[in-house]
Amino acid sequence: MSLKGTTTPVFINFAEVSGKDKDVLCMAICECKAVPELGKNGQSLRQVCVSKMMSKRDTLAIYQSEHKTEVNYDMTKDPPVPIMDFETKTMVHRWAPGWIKKNWNADPTHPLWLPGEGYVRRPDVVIVNDPTKPPTQDNIKQVVEIKFDDDDWGILQAESYEIISGRGKLALLTPKMCSCDDPDRKKRTADLKNEELVDELEGMLDIVANKGRRGGRRPRLPKKLPNLKD
Image 1: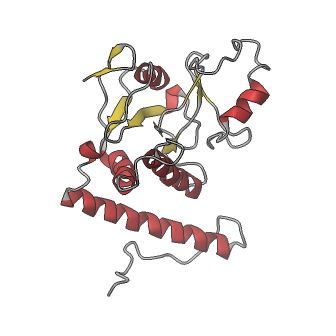
Image 2: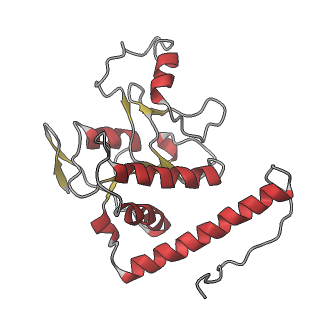
């Protein structure tokens, strides 16, 4: 598949997202497709919606979800290095400007910081092989860029993301590719949401049973929740 970048044509053979990975990402994409396209400040509310949904999943998994959203990468390193929380290496560092201010000049190998030079890049979703380890290139299964409607590719965006993922591991996903209106997709999304609700409730019971800490014994919930409309 070929794409035209903002200034230069780029040619990327996109990988295919499949299985549980596609179900999880399409659940977010199809839910967020109904969100208004742009906010008051011009930001993509749909992209923000997907990011919030995926971040919540990662938080509920105690930052050990296979799907990481908006990981910032230091592109001056070879391969690019993910910018993660100082203490929890599987937790995404959410405030890149703060990290840059504190750490950029402290590294003598960094060039002089110039905004807009692409020294830091942030793909939409990074899927990892081992969720107990940070999303370094050797642990990346796929980097997934999500595009809604007429979203454009930025300057060298696709090329940069393939540098992060490694060759052959960059994927593209859109509402059309998710077949959001297909009955089978809707059923799979509903089943996944039900499964995740069970996991969330079990996690809450876990915390209550252990006075604020996870771990220990707790009652099990049924794998299928009752239809509350009945």
